Structure formats: structure tokens, C-alpha cells
Length: 446
Image (cartoon, rainbow, N blue to C red; front, side, top):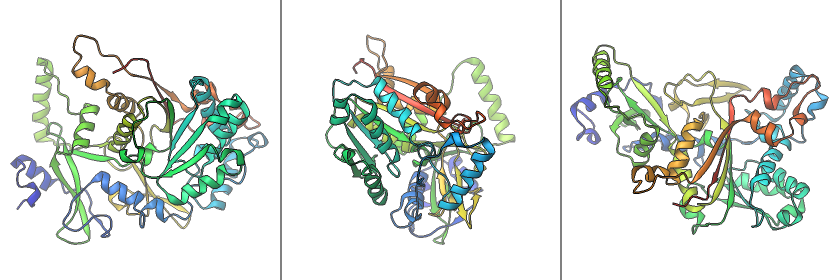
């Protein structure tokens, strides 16, 4: 018999939901999946990472690695010497990894500051928001750069606001930035969830900058599933099995507004109507019945939610985001699937089942930067103009560019500062799977 929440689902989909429990179950604690209450995958991810008492980032004693001093790359012989030095740092600090802004301080943040200074409207006070500021290294280095390189008026009148969900990291950021006393009058931390629209208060039409460095990879994602090549996509929910501590996936027709909107933006549900495509779909339907091939796709609904919030609250913002564009050795199935890893006795373990992440493992997603661009334009209202163009051709209200990290650093940074004696440059050579996304408002009004 189908579960109560499946009663109104068509027979074919009910059957698919029943048969599709092939995905391995996992033991659940009561805090992550409530009794008799299925949750969406994004809520599972959010709890596993951010639950204040049990989440991965709450339980870790040192959630963000902090270097005592900058690495002097010009004193290292080459890659081998750098890797040995890095290994000693990881053993000393007992963390999974250092962020690029920490490894390459101050040069990484200096490049970001230079890109802001080159393109900002300096006739108005400079205002920078950083989402998820970690230990405060990026904030301090950007303030350092402005103090040393910007016109005095820019530094003296600027504001730098960190929006940080972790109270312990908020305290650390104040401590880090406070190493330079003059920075404190320009810096503040707002300890809150950046995706909550209410936290931003009234809409602010003034220009500002928003930084999201290695933030997108840990935002909650949803998951959609199809039992074969032609069946409609379904939402994935997680519930406990028969009241036990074991949990597994169940599937429902698309109904959640955020999931449905993300599916629309990705275009995975679009079907062409040409004769050729109809024949192709018919053939695919026959094949799918004989050789059904389940499909899974991870959707960045957390990214959609935060960009929606930012565009509503700060319509004139300029955005800089950086993250990993792909992740190697991912064993979890699905497009844009995450890497789920935990650390035990100094060794890193990669999990094959995302349901095993229950506060003791990082859930780390790659960023599809071309999809990020589509989401950004959608949240700015451009997609709505396309659907209802009226008498005029719709115009984009954002100007965007995607750059490999090496290209960004070569354009705005000082690559010589992160080069070793033999010419090896870890910032340019070891982060080839990272990109920068820059989005600024145009003069086109909606």
C-alpha cells in the first residue's frame, strides 16, 4: 500500500516511487529526520551541515584553518617543497583544508580588492558585504589593501559588513580585523542567515559589493529523480522507514516552488516539438521500457534562494563569487553531485551515500557557473522580461563574466608573489578547477 502522502499520485509514479527505493538507506538520528515527517533533501543537507547542536560546521572545533603568518613562496624551491610545507601545516592544525584566501594571504584578497577598486563608483561611499567570512582573513586583507592603495576618502568612508551564520566565527572575524585598530570603525558582523530576506531590512537601492568566496559549495541543494529516460522528474524526499532509525528516499511529483523554479531555470524538463525530436522521443520511450536508466540531478536551490534574497534587498549590488567548478573522484550519482567526506584519525574518507552525512561529514558541491549565470539573470528579472517582452526586446540588467581563477589573478592580482624559486605557482597551477563569477548592474532598468 502506498504511503498516505502518495495517495493522490498517478499509478505509474506511485510504482516508480515504490521501486525506486534502491538507493541505500542509512541510520538516522532523530535530530536530522523527524518521526513521521519526510523532509526535502535541501533540509537534510542544511541540518547535516548547519544544525546548531549537531551540524558539521557546529561540531568542528576548528571549522576554518588560520595560518599564523603568510607563506613565503619565493623561499620554497618548487612544488615538492610546497607540498611538504603544506602537509606540515595540515598536520599542525588538524583540519581538512585551508581556503585559498588563507593559503595565499594577503595576495588572494588583494586581487579581489583591486578588482573592486578598478570598477567601483568612488563618488559614493564604498560598501562591501561578505557572505560567510570565515576567520575574517579576507575582510582584513581587503581593508588593508584599501588603506594602502585607495584614496584616503575611500578607506575613511567605507563600510565592510560580514554576514555570518556562526557566532563563533563572527567573534573570530572581529578578532582578526581588530589587529588593525583603524579597521574596526569600518567593519561589523551581522550574525544571521543571509538567505533570510527579513534580516536585510528595507530594500537598499544604493550601489554595493557582495562577496561569496567558497560559499556556494556548502549551500543546501535539492535532488530530483526519474526512473528512466523519459518519465517526468520527481522531487526526492527523505523519511524514516516504518518508524525505525533507518531512512531512505521517497519520490513525489514536482510541487515545491523552489524545486520547480530551479528545474525550469536549468531547462532539464524542456522538450522540443519538431518532427525529428518527436521521433527521437518515441524511440527513447521504447528503449527506456526495455533498458530503463534512472536519472538523478542535483539542483542548487540554496543558491537560487540566496540570489533571490540579494536581488530583492540589494538591487544595485555587484557580485563576486568564487568556487570549485568541478570535483574529482565523486562517487555519488547524479548531475552536479556532491563530494561527501569525513575525517577520522587524520585520514579522509569519501562516502558513496550522501545519507551517511549526519553531522560528521562535509557535503561539498561543485558549482555550475553557467547555471549560476542563468540563476543570477532570473533573479534579476530578465527571464520574466523574456516571457513577457511586450513591445520592446528585453534587455539584461546584469553584465556578467566567468573567469578561471588563474585568469582573474593575472588580471587583478600579483602572480609573482605566489611563485616558487623554479617558477611553480600553486595559485595558478593547483586551482584549475576553480572559477570566479563577476556580475554588475547595467544602466538598463526593469
